[in-house]
Length: 252
Image (cartoon, rainbow, N blue to C red; front, side, top):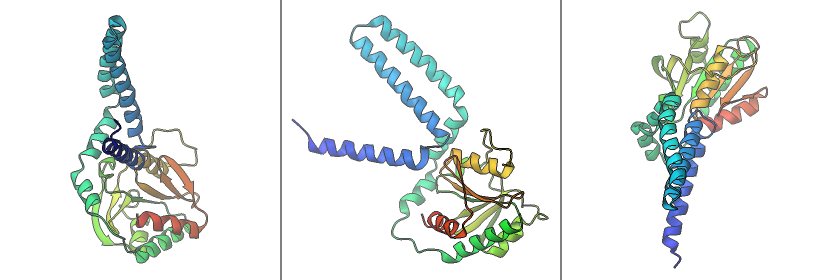
């Protein structure tokens, strides 16, 4: 007899898993780990099915293959596994995410300050790296740098990224509508990038590959403004489009 309650529970669980995957795993380094775990699960299931069907030789072969690959998976994906476990174990991040609710008021003052500073730095070819992490991305950032905890202002951003200051080469971390820290160190992407991309772009791409963070980069050489998300760059020549994008990022 068909059980509607069981069916609804399965649908809800599947939707939650899919939402988690698309929000925090898809197009990041952890996606490789998840795919590896799924493939491993298929091998284990197949080995039990073969044994149940009395295909003992084939079942034993699949069993030992799955066991060998399980050990190899731990070694090969050790960095990704560490970050994935840190993501799941980020109790504070999950707590803040679950407590957050309702409609958030748009922070137009912070948005104006960021857009104004980025536009000025682009015109003056001042390099900049600004990170907008989600509440679960803390483990992906190698080092947050110097704690600032200040209201976002264009003057402060311009001061931080001025090339004579000690923090200008690092990343500014924006959290809870404030400048949380400056001089942050991000994981570098291992992908082969175009020659025009420097260390800032490699760092921005690296963090976007390993987390759901949004990272804004201003090129010191060309003044180009780009945003890295899910391992891909998007260039912004139109300040209106950039403002619309940052508005979504700040208010998500």
